[in-house]
Amino acid sequence: MTTISVVSPFLELITICLGYLGNVPSGNVKALSDRDIRTSFVNCSKGEAQRAALPRDLAERPWADLDFLGWRDPGAPDRAYLVAEHGDRLVGVSLRIAAQRRGLLHRGMCSLCLTTHPGPGVTMMTGRRAGQAGRDGNSIGLYVCTDLACSLYIRGKKRPELGGRFDETLSLDEQIGRTRGKLAAFLDQILVSSAQQPAGTEPD
Image (cartoon, rainbow, N blue to C red; front, side, top):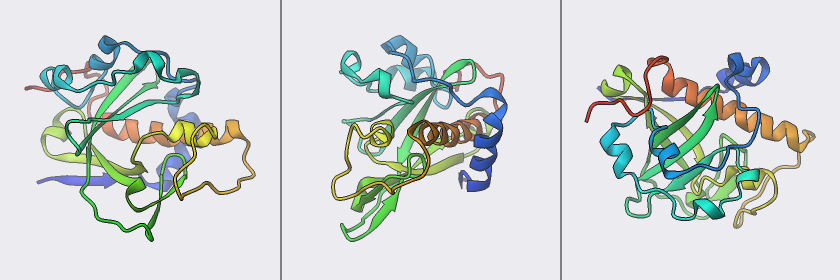
């Protein structure tokens, strides 16, 4: 039986306040190579990791402004990937994008960066849990910017089309810390059943 859970706001609050036992990343994601990315995946097989379509513009990515690397698979509209520093290691997650039909009058909010977008600008993405839980069909989902450009929206490096961000009393550093805390909560839920499992060891 397939089960999809959504990271709860209460869990996110605990993550932000307590630092989630040191797993909340303290800096931007470093510049990554193809090998770094392929060996980081925790919820897919080695074969799937090798077949994943990676970004062709890694050298041009604004690494100094990225809390995580996220991208859509141009050849598979229902697939996306996310890679971030988590605790003392790099964690990559394969994501599925839920099919949706939303008009421009509908607005959604990203659960990571709190940016609002019209229509399909915010999407439910689900990641299979690592280990046996994932093989049993359990997944974790969250609503996130469809283009996965959360880091740039927070810093004002990119502006959402027809969407926006709320005026907040939090400083930029605090907003970045909140996003990293929410991301850490999501990744911990992906990893919850496989704390000791090496990356890319799901069976083909």
